[in-house]
Image (cartoon, rainbow, N blue to C red; front, side, top):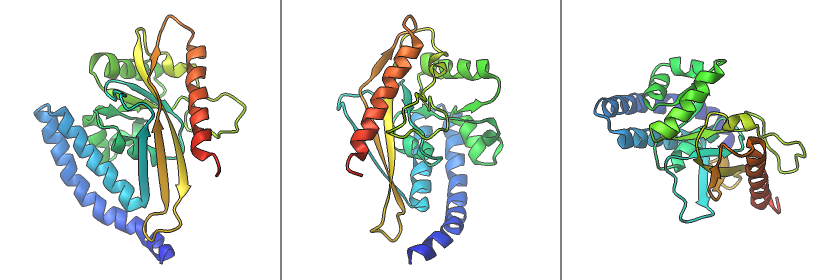
Length: 235
């Protein structure tokens, strides 16, 4: 039965999500016109949760620190696949920006929504990308999600450091960083769901531009690796 559902899943995703996302796009557009940033982001969360459900992905998230303030933060963690992007949007309940390849913004409906949501187009113009990241957080009050190892998969047993200090270069003042760790597990006892993502948000870090970026990103990576080990211990 599950094999049959997986064969039909792409058709289900396209046929159901596309018309719904047209309606969501209209809502995002109107929210932009009337400067309703919170409503606009909540519509994006609805789209993300729908996409994850139709794709057969369950999400579990938790915070190590119950007093964690999710607003106006720089989220840094490990990348495990493209579905982590809507997964993070679905569980971070404050207006948050993704960094996406520039050509994604030219996709009808979805790309237009990315633009209205103030997502950041990534291109070879690194100075422009860094300026946008800094502007979103320090001036416009958004949070931003980034993956300091790029699209490299971080494994708990990797000995080589993968997080790059360049991810901290956009900032000339102190900012709040929230590290996160993500793992994926296969779901074998469900007809519809095929995988489960567990996202753990760790204690806040304060980035200080006067201190070593290399040392600070290494501290963050060490905490993410430790949490990956805790999440996968016994697997």
